[in-house]
Amino acid sequence: MPGDKSISHRALLFGAIAGGETRIEGLLPAEDPLSTAACLRAMGVEVSPIAAGQLVRVQGVGLDGLQEPGEVLECGNSGTTMRLMLGLLAGRQGRHFVLNGDGSLRGRPMRRVGDPLTAMGASIHGRSGGNFAPLAVLGRPLQGSTLHTPVASAQVKSAILLAALTARGDTTVIEPAQSRDHSERMLRAFGADLEVGGEARTCVTVRPGASLTGQHVVVPGDISSAAFWLVAAAVIPGAELTVENVGLNPSRTGILDVLEQMGARLEVLQRRTVAGEPVGDLRVSHGPLQAFDIGGDLVPRLVDEIPVLAVAACCAEGISRIRDAAELRVKETDRLAVMTRQLGVMGARIEAFDDGLAITGGVPLHGAELDSETDHRVAMSLAVASRLASGDSLLHRPEAAAVSYPGFWDDLQRLSA
Image (cartoon, rainbow, N blue to C red; front, side, top):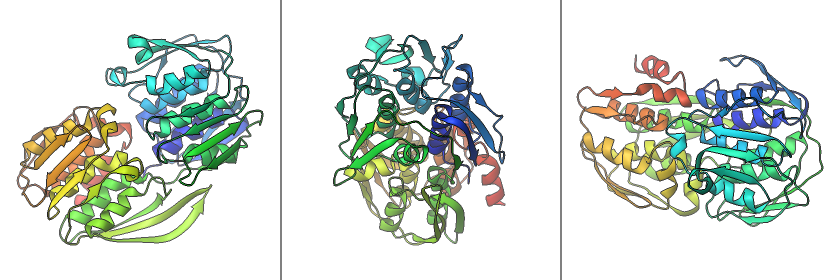
């Protein structure tokens, strides 16, 4: 499996502000992490070339070593790059930065990150009161704060944690539910003074002053990318598949809970810990599938997998319901609307709500002319749907998959042979 995208971003960012060299094995050579690397290089960080199977070396410049760039920092399509950069740059005193992205990214809301950073003293300006890129950041001294985030978002939390590293005084982030915790795990490994508390591990405190030290990071396979194969094996009669070396961080394994709830035959093999992250092999095979219900605290644990779970719901007996997923409306696309449109063209009985979907299973899908609408997870979800449909499908803008999984189409062809 390709390396985990979330961990790849963070390994680059934390390596850049650490002292000494960070070596990264298995870094995802996809468009989003490449955008993060390009931004870091523009600020004076040495990052070795990134290619599949190649060790990546980052020469850290320390917590305050980032240089003011002579150019706009281009984040491409990567919301993670832009949002984490806001936290990284907000406290770089006296330095100016401008962040921009492609058309899709310029339409995604950024005040969810900008507002808590502004409460710490950050200066962030952009369109619609700083909600949309391009965004200008003037580095200023930051004050540690206690901040409640309105949504459980690893991007928002991670941006605040990055800003907290150089703030005056402790910073505490309190989320309504636990989001993925890769930043907390990795920051601790790099030497940050960080504590996680609360019954549901939703409270994170950073005490500034600790120096970060370069590490050897091993990036596991991305469970969000594995999800397409897991669903395909679960819904295609006679299919059986083993996906090796997949990250099994508990804040990311909601997809496994739902597949088991549906009745898919699923085994976790060779459980182990690699560089502080739980890893294992996943074996899944087809079985009679029942409808599912998703909502509440489960949503942050599988938010990126909801598009492909919508495909799985088409094959299940009964009505599947997804609620509390309004976050999907502000991803690369409005994923609730896009999946409703595209699966509807294939004959699915699917209805969108403000915060979710209702899908009636058991209605046969037929081939159709489809469009990723430039969204990588939509493109790959529709590929799985096309394998289930009767007749051929034509997918427009399939290249969107390269944002997170450059080899997806090659792997699909190989597994279909």
